[in-house]
Length: 68
Image (tube, rainbow, N blue to C red):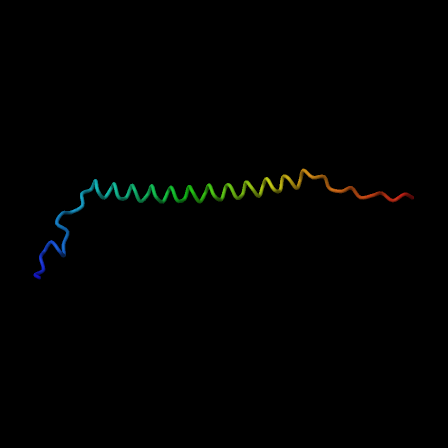
């Protein structure tokens, strides 16, 4: 089997539009990942804050006063 030029080199160059589209899709993917991580963190912090609020709602036991 003989080696041909097409096996080792790309027959066509990528156009500027193709490069821009690839960059755009990669950037959108990164932004979506960051947004998902931010939403996950927000939900976790919201749950913790609600748990703290529920603890604050419960009244603390009042100490009994001693009679003199």
